[in-house]
Length: 152
Ligand SMILES: [Zn+2]
Image 1: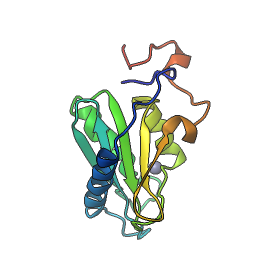
Image 2 (image 1 turned 90 degrees about the vertical axis):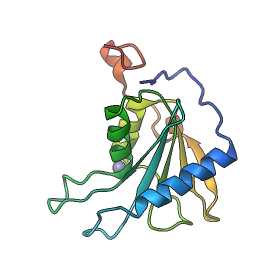
Image 3 (image 1 turned 180 degrees about the vertical axis):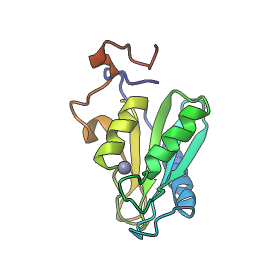
Image 4 (image 1 turned 120 degrees about the vertical axis):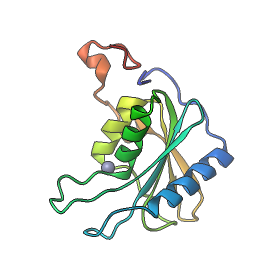
């Protein structure tokens, strides 16, 4: 996993950002959100070009609910992906930003401090924000004496 704070995010071309938003919207269709009525979709782009999607999966206990971004991260890591470029997140409204929650910002930092976060603007077009702007001063594995990249 790449969580090297010094690395600048690689730029994301508009076509890729738009494709990621579309994939997140597609994933949102599978949302299990009977309690909040707030379906969310996410699409995580790996460095190798694979895209892992996720949706929120709610639970009657509320606290066991899993966010869409975390679903995508767990799917990706469990399938061997370790380096990521960007993640798109969409809520129920195609023309409203749906930024990752605080917990997801931390989870995303674990797999890529240099990630770019794509959300729709009020025109429905992609807005790209570096994760480091959403989670300044992040706590990462390097603070535990682990090298960036998740090496054991
Ligand atoms: Zn979240």
